[in-house]
Picture 1 (cartoon, rainbow, N blue to C red):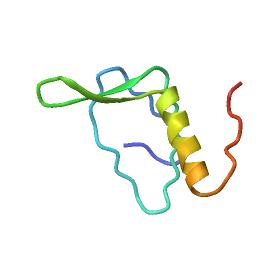
Picture 2 (picture 1 turned 180 degrees about the vertical axis):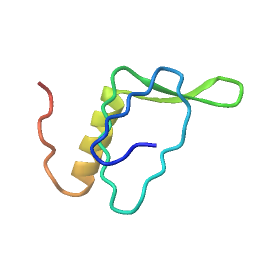
Picture 3 (picture 1 turned 90 degrees about the vertical axis):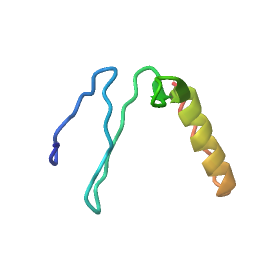
Picture 4 (picture 1 turned 30 degrees about the vertical axis):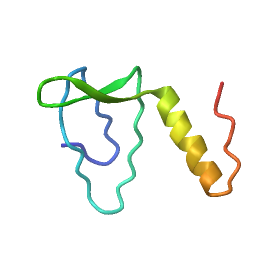
Length: 72
């Protein structure tokens, strides 16, 4: 269980469900890819920097907002 101001590091293969109280602000830093697997350990999806950037850009454009250039 993490509390305000704490940093949590999750090792590869960690399986969990995020639960938080109302008003919680969480910052995720992803290094590498997150692979989503089914009950038979088959990869059924993934997230990485490219998929997150696409989500960001698509969301901004759907809201009529010019996305910031976050490439650096």
